[in-house]
Amino acid sequence: MIDVIEILKECGALLEGHFLLSSGKHSNKYCQCAKLLQYPDKAEKVISLVYEKVKSLNLDVIVGPAMGGITAAYELGRQLGIKTIFTERENNVMTLRRGFEIQPGDRVLIMEDVVTTGKSSMETAKVLEEAGGIVVGIGCIVDRKVCEIQFPVYSSIELFFETYDDKNCPLCEMGSKPIKPGSRKF
Image (cartoon, helix red, strand yellow):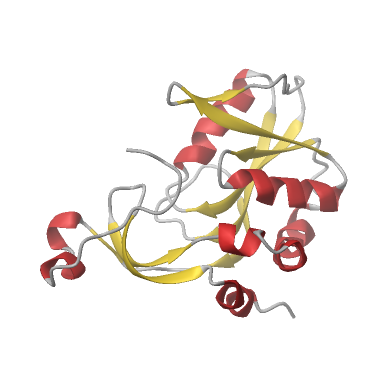
């Protein structure tokens, strides 16, 4: 059995402190999957758990939203032996660029590092559906959903971290200032 928590700890991917999340909320914990993805052998093990859940979905394409989803998507695509591309923001709008294409009817899985609000995934789903793709789900290393998402989510692990509004954050009340990890800008 693969102990995802232990692997995340070994890589230094589970962080403790005071973090400003992309949602605007604060938390005392953060999962920085880039720390896992720097070790291909460990990433292969952790993402193999997603592979086992999605291998029978008859997928045509894996799409990773930039930045966090690119490497995770590539590894899942490698394990599945299928085409893997990514979306990225252009003028703050998620797009397909670099000559990447989705063919009408392509069965697509969006692959992320961490899913929290699903914002990047939903922006990516819109682009894929507009191109004629059929989004069959969202894969991720860490599922820490804080809201409902319209697609099935296939994860390596589910984690729950306490989050706080900035006005009710006990860390702020103690005088701590949050740091903003991750790639999304406000």
